[in-house]
Image 1 (tube, helix red, strand yellow):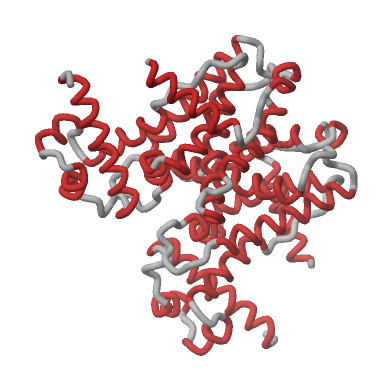
Image 2 (tube, chains in turn blue, orange):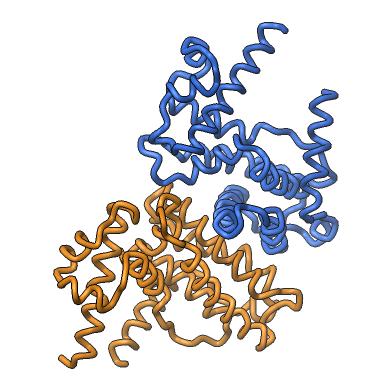
Length: 215
Length: 215
């Protein structure tokens, strides 16, 4: 295994361990010692990748967004896909769950939680700006404002879904969110062609994993 | 002062004290003893109104919704008004802030937080059902689904606003929420007549307080 590949794997192992410990114990109670033990790496290896507990949290935040999905006919379809896929990953991947948990953890003392939202909002705003450039958006739409609303609404929807049924119905709720929000931002011709369905999440995610393997 | 009026005032004093203690210490750490001390009432008075810490939390939840606003030309305008007024009260009233804080407090051990959402969702769904009966909604709208989405999105929007600027921009963000959601549910003739502006919150709240005094 090449050195670079090994470093990437070690980084991922550390992030997964950190995510699990943050998820179980909360950010405030989690210690670097516990994360080292869980990851089975040396202190030197951890500090090579991450300088502090806060940097570990930032790494967990970033990992949530580090996925590339197959391109679609419209940028709004790509926006829908990224929401549906995030819903699915929240149910399946502890690291993604920990990332959202951290961003919403009001008891996370000393942790600046704004980067988690900022990264996610920036990514959403970039997709909306591309959609706008292609004429997919209604003329009044302001991409940062809409991106902030989408990220906030998604966060609230996942909170309610978590409270009600441990996120079992999250994809369905995200479909309801897009069904309500998109008529307010999409031009009719694009809106009519969007595929917004809970089943789509699994399909898109499988495609993106195949691509990553073939990559 | 009549006995009933005194009881209502005592109940309110206790709820305000409970809200303040929940807000400052978190639900799990808060004790009945602290709430008694803050309220300046006897143990007997408190237990006359509330049987347990959980019942106090329920009382705080209910208080958030216990406000009647002036009737408007459309039920959707009343829905908008209740959202704008809640945003304003969240900034101004510690009791309302504590109520929402409790509902979103993932660390509130032993507290069933679903009633907080259920009461709020039920109230929203009732308003939407009335709007539907009057022909204000697009035919596909299902009132419970939309009510759940509205409550979840509002919760997420207030979380982001709290994180960013201690809710200073909350009314503006709630305006953005309604601007995006209403085109997906309102018939055009009603949509065109809605007044969705941040300034409206203070005006409606002042009117409702005048009415309560004139009672």
